Length: 233
Image (cartoon, rainbow, N blue to C red; front, side, top):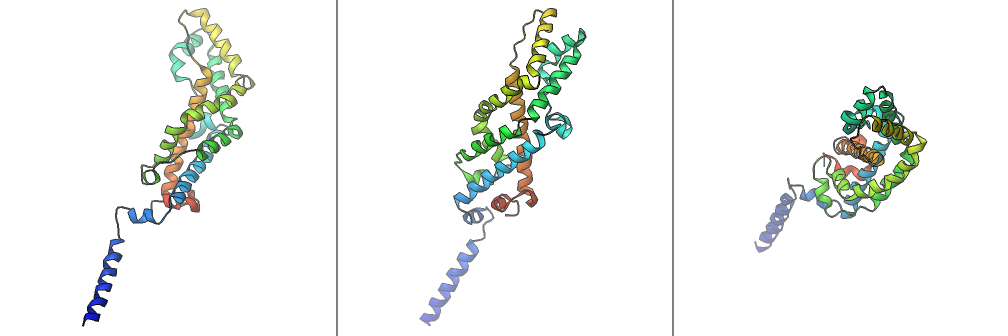
């Protein structure tokens, strides 16, 4: 009888432990993966998202027309000052040229920007993998942006600077500023290179957010290492 009681106790203990494995909070799922696997999933997601963003925007007509022009570098803050003044005096074509050339510059930078993103992702320190994995649809990209935006912005300066003359952005800009000064004494304080860099980076990060969301909900956008990010887990 005592032996039977011991056996029943063991069975009951095993049953209790088995039931305890059912955990709607996701803790059990998290235990299936090591921290190293989680970090790899996060960084692979960032690399895939960055690659998609670069393919979409740093390509012919990318910044200018992709997504119905939502990423276009359009100098909105100058529309009511510089652009309107020049247009009023017959120089509106210069504004059109500046917009076109600036977008062509941005679209030409893929080969220079790709390794910058790779370096930023590889050196990213992740303090809480679970918070990013279980966070909002863009949690990983937003975390990346928080810690690497300044690095990327600084790194973008060189490839953009090299192209400012190559794509006629600087000559057109200088012509616009000179003509503007002929018709108004209102000073124009505007860092055009910095503006282009910020618009490029903001657009790429926004596109990365969209791709991260797809990685989470669509297995076609995930590699094997990223399966932990899938909504079915």
